[in-house]
Length: 331
Image (cartoon, rainbow, N blue to C red; front, side, top):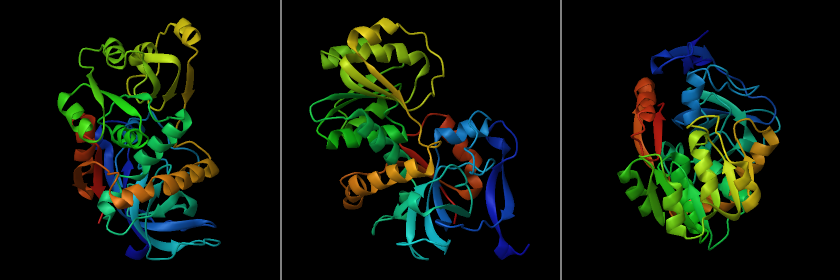
């Protein structure tokens, strides 16, 4: 194969620590009908990447199994048949089931949106996964003006996006974090109240602040935190379980669910069908992208690493020191 037929990609050589991420040369992918090829400029890191590296979160069928990466920003390099409204040379950003840790990727044309003028590709890489997830979460929770919304891990990428979107809806965000500095930074994004969970307890504090409990919760933690999340809920509250960084199991009092008539829903963006992903992307494009273009909403970028620094980027994300997004620049 010639240099023009290959690309560099970061692969998971075997399940394990960050050091298992290695640079490899792979065949350049070709777009099929309805697909485009993107020359990747930058990609954002997500907790799912860490789990995939550990062998705990395989990529969905049809996505690269050994190349992580759920979001990207770059320039359209080639078009497959039946692609309309996109041209070679367009700057785009979007979501994929995997494969963003590479110089090129192939994706459904319906899973990308234009990068607004004035937004760099480096900055754009921090947008798609977290803002699409956060917007989709608030839509599913039907968050209304005047409501209280609990956001766990408020300093995460999804947390920082959700905080701003909640504030934009006229609702009040109460966020949790184990770090006071992250709570302070989240207040600058519109968070109304913050709760430090360093000692593991937060339900009492949430109830004290809200007086009646929260109307909705974006739960990025699950695990042992979930029983307390239930205790935080107001009558007929809604919980959307988005992540399980605190574990997959919890012992809960189901009586709380019955007495308060709670609604609990689980969601994951990565494993949805192509059509469902396209719908989520389109909803984000229409409702959120204009505010990102105008600066009313912002992507929070903590640090940018080079392509050869992916191991260090994973180590940094795992350290939990970051606030917002960690981005890797490919070229």
